[in-house]
Image (cartoon, rainbow, N blue to C red; front, side):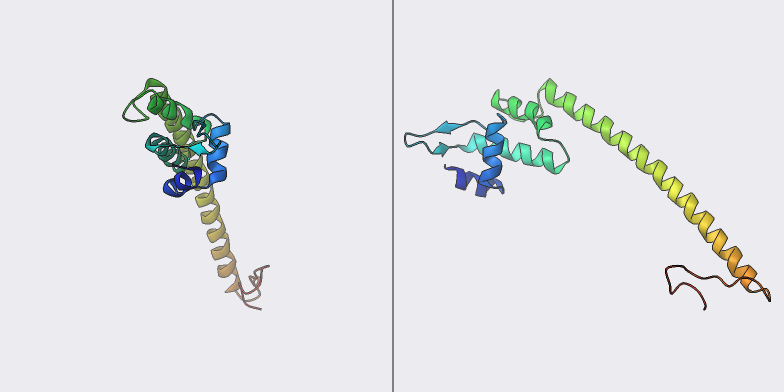
Length: 143
């Protein structure tokens, strides 16, 4: 098949395919008149790359999976190098999840502090002569 058909079947663009080719991920075969030609195994490579990228893998991280498929394995993740990439990615994800959890806790504490401060202001405002709470962004308090 030609590059346009492969791009359409893989759900990508010919520009992307040429980029993958330049990075050595997609084989560059040409027919007699110089047109790029591809087969079903190339479509399989592309689907592997696209799936991994959808999961957040960088293009270079897909290389061991592509090489595994090229070596004739039925799945791109059946080789030791692919498993190593999975392990590394899981470690990165665990770190990000922990960082996000810490940020969430901080935001939760800030919200609780802000709500308590607002409640205290509202309570003070109920006392004659107390402060009138106002929102500097407008629309948040009595005027």
